[in-house]
Structures are given as structure tokens and as C-alpha cells.
Length: 188
Image (cartoon, rainbow, N blue to C red; front, side):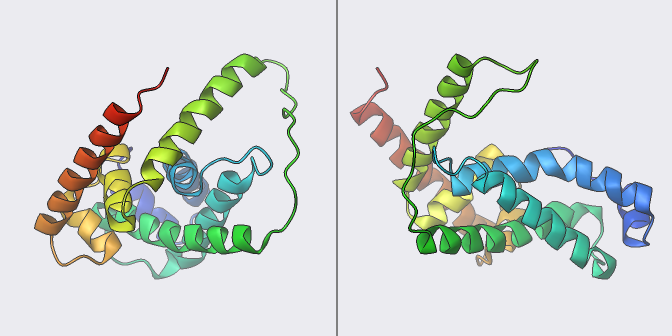
């Protein structure tokens, strides 16, 4: 996870358009990974994670003028917004009654071939399945601590958990559960 430069953040909060654009460019990869991990990928809804990431960035953009906590807490602030937007995305999915159609998305020139896309999709689906086997708090802790590298304290702040100790316990239990699931059903 890329740290946010304090000067860049201060300029963006002050309303500097170039700084705001650069800040959003810094945030986008981490936010997109978070949304993909939490929303998952469905063959008929490839854009769900991208749409969710866009909503997160819009939420950050709207809240940016009122941000007053410094660069050290900024990622926690961003992931707090992301957690709410992921819930919204799941609600939209639950309301969607459309029938999926199996087809590959077109690959623009210069991008990877469909075989690599299928392998990536299979890895993401496996990861999404494994994370879905965890209790919600354990899943959130594993995503924030392992995949995004947040500290136990920052993870506790984002999730509204009492302290860093309970985050570490949830992480330990979540990773132990993942090891058991992987050992019970190895990938061929």
C-alpha cells in the first residue's frame, strides 16, 4: 500500500485540483483491490468492483474538504468509506434479478489474452470463495491486515473494534481457518 504524502493531502484538502487528481490516482489501485476482494467478480457483473471503486473515490472526493486527521490516518478514512460502499454494492446485487450470460469481455489491443484473463478470474473466484468461508469480522481483518497492510490499530479504527489485540486475535483465527480450508480442498 502506497503511503499518502502529507503535502499532497494538504493541497488536495485545500482544493488544489492537480493535487486532488494525483491523490485519487494514488488511491485508485488500493481501493480497486479492496473492492475486488470484498465485492468479488461474477462473470455477468465484471464492472461491479470497478463501479464500487469509483463510488468510493467519489465519496472520498466529497468528504475531502472536511478531512482533518493528517496523512497517517488517511487510508483508514478511505477504507471506512470503502466499507460502506461495498455494503451498498452488495445491496444492489441482491436487488438484481437478471440472469447471467456466459461470455468473455472483449480484450482491447495490447492487453493480455483471454487465457490469462480466465486464470486471473479463477484465482479471484477462489480467493473470494475462501474469504466467504470466514466470519465477516475475520474476513474484514484479513483483507485489511494481510492484503492491504494496515496496522492492527488502523484496522481497529476502520472496523470500529475495541482494540488492536482483538484485531490480531481475529487475524490469527481467520488465517488458521483459511489454512484448514485450503488443506481440506487443495486446488488441482
